[in-house]
Length: 264
Image (cartoon, rainbow, N blue to C red; front, side, top):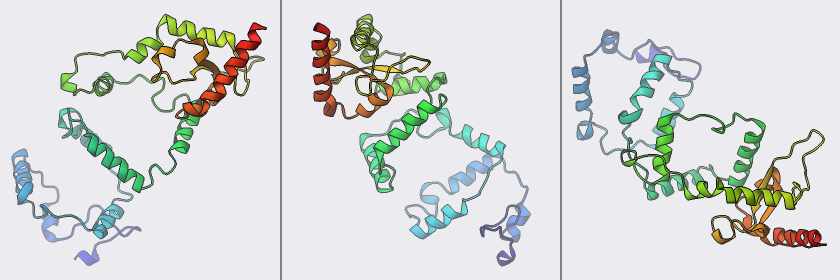
């Protein structure tokens, strides 16, 4: 009977047809929750005939190919979503260990996920500039997502979370002293990018950044030093991300030249 079952263009068995008379007779039967629980126990742990075994690479490929083109109804998708949300998720309240994160990253490297990370970051930044709705920028996240992110930043579980806490970095950047430092940098550089010399005017807007020549995180004593800041446009600032030390001498030299010219 199995040989006569119709298949689609991809060689997959079509929905509504069955392998045997037994499954044909069972079509439409609904089991009680108790019966379902018994079925689950019959195939859980050691009782599962596949317990302790692993799929071969060939079987993995076959399973992957068989899932191509498969679609679920809206009702089924909703049920799957609910079954993995909140406390129903087996990973609820847990966090990946450092070892598991490193293992995952190694596997992604082997699979070619991070062949060109700088190019990937550049594409993300370009998309964010072109499309204001790209990613999460400007979007209001649900409260449960904000709580989860807050707990992660505080390095605690969701059950230990007691409220939102602003980071020291965020408090400093919102302080009056930091804002005044930023204004001083822009005024000294005449609101002009010191790399490409772009400037707003004639209906053209240039977004400027007050860039720390020596990194904000590594040199806390220089965070408000006017000689440790330089004006850059968004495009030029993006080029320095992750390469701050490579630009230190170049930017420091420019600031010295600007200071000398302002004194004359």
